[in-house]
Amino acid sequence: MKKYKYNDNNLAICYYRFSSHAQNEASIDQQREQAKFFAQTHDLKIIKEYSDEAISGTTDNRPGFQQMLSEVAKLKPSTLVL
Figure 1: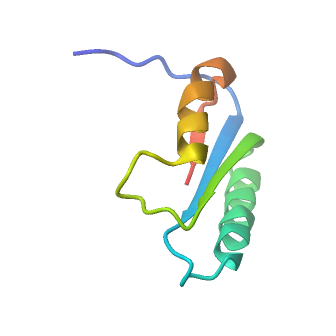
Figure 2: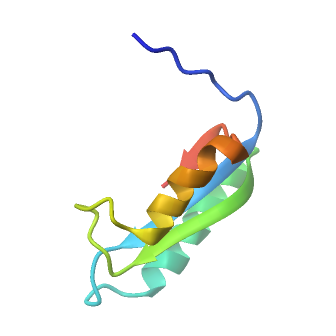
């Protein structure tokens, strides 16, 4: 079994997404507000935010999601806020 190293810091990254054009674009802003509240409540510093608009969560082919995956090893956050 592979063990994962816990990054003992207060750094967080955030990922926001909504599925379709039928959903309200304010959804991203609402998610951002909730993420900032969560980070503040848990003494986390948000260092990067990613988002995908009108893309289904059933696919990994999402530009923001892929960028997040490519940068996470470099950023080394302790927390991902969704």
